[in-house]
Length: 71
Image (cartoon, rainbow, N blue to C red):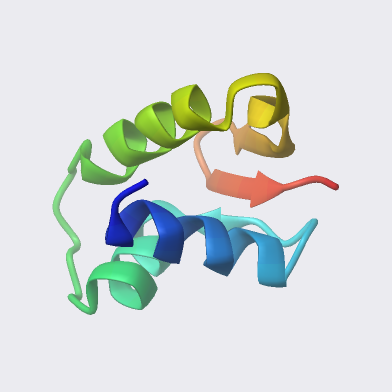
């Protein structure tokens, strides 16, 4: 797991059930205010889910909003 994947997982797991927008995730994990469309967050979530294996279903996509963790 990369450092950014770890930071992303930590963010979601610290506040289960809270939906984070892609922009919020960019600001909190990457430390940048990024308002343009980007697939960076989506790609990191995809690889993180692959690495979580059987537990990949804890990261939920909230369509047109962002991501959340469900424990």
